[in-house]
Image 1: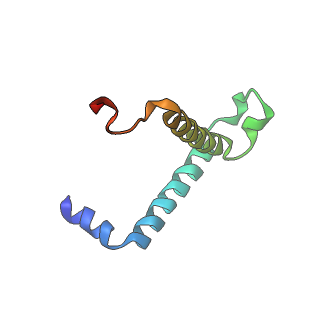
Image 2: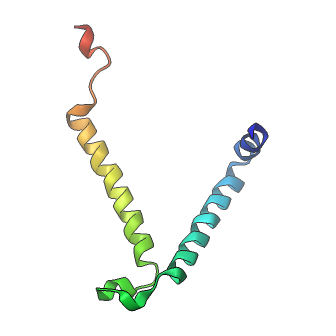
Length: 82
């Protein structure tokens, strides 16, 4: 297992391309596996709609959580020392 991690760590371009290829294959496979006959909205019939919906939703979740963290959840390291 450690040799596999070292293999990917030594080849960052290959690792990035492999991950992007895997994500693309999963997105294509998922777009063909979804049954569009039971779609409730017209948007749901767009190919890869749920893939991009999940991507945008995840990105928004990260951005909102970072914003909330900087508002007050994160504080100085010496906050309790005073």
